[in-house]
Length: 185
View 1 (tube, one colour):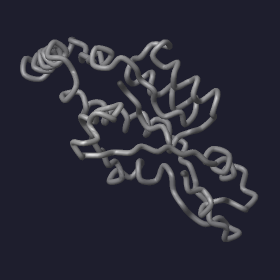
View 2 (cartoon, one colour; view 1 turned 30 degrees about the vertical axis):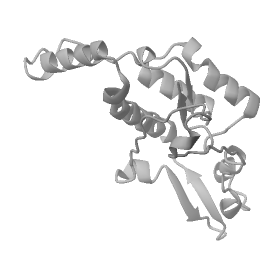
View 3 (cartoon, helix red, strand yellow; view 1 turned 45 degrees about the vertical axis):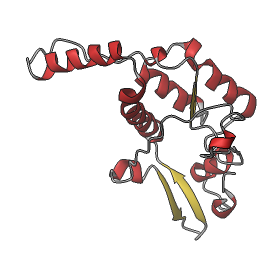
C-alpha cells in the first residue's frame, strides 16, 4: 500500500497539492517461497532480481523531496525533471538486466558496436540498443503517468503496441506507481 497518509499535504500551495492527486493508494502482493515443496504450485519462477540506487546523484535525490512550506505544512515536492530521472533510472535497470536475459546474438551485436566505437574510434557508428523484445514476450511498466510512459517509450525505443498494457493500466486504474514497477514475462 502506498503510504501517503504521513505525507498528505494540507496547505494551499497548488504546485505541491499535485502530489496529493498523484500518490493516493495502490497495492500489490506477491508471495515468494524457496521451499522445494512449493515448486509444483507456483505460477512463476523468479530468475533475476536487480536493484539500482540513484540517490547518490543530486538530481535524483532531490526529484521527490519532503519539506515544509511557508505555513509549516509538511509536503512532498516533485521536481520538474522527475520523468527524465525516472526514465534514466529505468534505462539503467534494463541495461543491468540485459546481460542476464538477452540472447547471445543481441549481446554479440552490442559488444561488436561497442568495440567499434570505443577501441577503433569509429564514432560515426550509432550505439546499438539491444532488442529486449527478443528476451521477453510481454512488458508492463510503471503506470505513474503519461509523461513517465512517454519517457520510457523514448528511452527504450518501444512501439505503441509494446507500451499498450502500461497505458491501459494507467487509463483503467490511474496512477499505480508503487504497485507496478516493471512486469515482464
